[in-house]
Structure formats: C-alpha cells, structure tokens
Image (tube, rainbow, N blue to C red; front, side, top):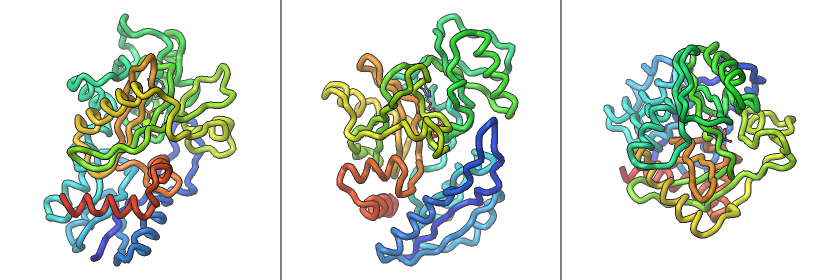
Length: 322
Ligand SMILES: Nc1ncnc2c1ncn2[C@@H]1O[C@H](COP(=O)(O)OP(=O)(O)OP(=O)(O)O)[C@@H](O)[C@H]1O
Ligand SMILES: [Mg+2]
C-alpha cells in the first residue's frame, strides 16, 4: 500500500508577537511518521503542499497521511481534506469542518455552549474600544483568537485589571488578530487524547504539573511549550495518569467526548482543559494535533501501552475504515 505524507512548507512562518523563533524541530512530526510508516512496511512518498494547494489535483495514492499544519492562512488547513474528499482519496485525521471551526477559538466555544459543555466565560474583542462585559470576573486571560501552539500567550496574557487587559488586547491586535478574553481558571491543567470517531477510545487522563511557579501564572505559555532554556519549559512536567478522583475522571471523559463530537473530530484529537471544583472547563479541542514522537499525544499513548508504531497504525486503520 502506498501512503503519501502531505506536509506544507513551514519555514515561511514569521515570528509573531515577542516570541523567540524556534524553527528547529518544525518537521519532527514528518520525520517520526515517515520512519514509523517505513518500519510498518508501507511504501512512503512525501508531497509538499504550497499555499496554493494546486499540487493536490494531480495526486494519486492509496492513502494520505495528512500532516499539513501552520499554513500562513489557517483556513488553508481546512481546504486540504476537502480537496482530498472531492478526489475520493482517503486521509488520516479530521475533516474540513472540524479544522475550520477550531481555527477560530470563539466559534469552537460557541459550539461548546450549544452542547452544554463547560468552558470558561468569554468575550471576543474585535476592536480595542469594546467595553468589557460586567459578568466577566478578573483575573482574565487574553489570547489571539486564531492562533495555536500558545503563540501570543506569555505570563503577561493573564491580566488583573482593565489597564492590563486593554494593553494586552492592543498587543494582540497589532498582529491583526481578534482577541479572545476568557476568565482565568486557576485549576489543574489536563490533557485528554481521543482516538476514533463515533465512540472514540479515550487514553489515560494526563495532567501537567507546574513546579516552583509561586507567583507566576501556571499556564502552558509559549515559553513552556517551545523555549527549552526557559524556566517555564524546564519546570513543567507531564504526569499520567493525572492525580484526580474517580468522579473527576468520569466527568472529564464525559465532557471531552462531548467536545470531540461537537467539533466533529475523527481520527485522533487532543482536548486541553482546566479542572476546578470538579468541573472540567474545556479550553479547546485540537483536531490533528502534533504527532511527533515526543509530543503530548504520543507520550500519553505510550503511557497507555501503545508503541509509537501502534499509534500510527491505528490512525491509518481508522482512515481506511472511513
Ligand atoms: N481560561 C484559561 N484559564 C487558565 N489557563 C488558560 C486558559 N486559557 C488558556 N490557558 C492556558 O494557556 C494554554 C494555551 O491555551 P490554548 O490551549 O487555548 O492555546 P493554543 O495556543 O491553542 O494551544 P495549543 O494549540 O498549543 O494547544 C493552556 O494550555 C493553559 O495553560
Ligand atoms: Mg491548547
């Protein structure tokens, strides 16, 4: 069977906000998946999709392993499965509408509300003159509405008063992005991996432990995720299974399944949430999350007894069954 790994050109990315450019490792997922496919005995080809996506018109293959991520225009990511579907080519991961909804955090949160899924109270700012709604209580967190990978999220994203809030909103808007303002949930950081479609398999609930943060906000900031020599990167640790009660686990799994379904995910996905007073506040659902060998998803899969190859095989089998 011939599998084509689809990826886009990611070097073209500009560094946004005040982030340090961490261009190393940007193709880790591609390398990990390619090695796994070869060792599983598949014939593997790699195809680079440009911003135009024209190249897909000529594509002939048995299956696409879709690793497109981080186009300059986030909407492009959603076009790829759409084109593949039109060509009747099977592909791994989620379809176009899930990718489209989650490229816009505000839209995804409206979906959660529709399905009665707990999510932090929020307000979308499309200009910096908007008044803060009186029902939103400080501390708040300000995030770019259309980013991922914690771009634009540093310790300064957590704000305690209106002065800090509007300063941060203006900061986000400098990159021509709307600002999503949410109540800051001072709770446990939880990650849940789901694999499948209608009745997805849920891997062990995992948490991130923040060591020695004292007065710093305990968040998975840009630094905590990507900047290896930063305090936040070095002092955040994954713990699987999470230190939670049976009742909390049950509620987390219930809400994560609802959220995965509300976004219409298939294949594999990762839900990020904050647990406080027994309530799992869903932050976001990530369809087609990072599949590098050392990414959260792969680590959690390993904790549940799956090898990396098992995980990749499972994702392929699901795509074939579609
Ligand atoms: N309302 C909130 N309360 C507390 N912490 C939050 C809240 N929103 C975001 N965070 C923190 O910021 C991190 C990043 O937020 P979020 O997952 O929404 O952004 P992202 O850029 O889409 O992340 P990624 O795509 O890498 O998963 C969260 O993992 C969490 O630590
Ligand atoms: Mg996240």
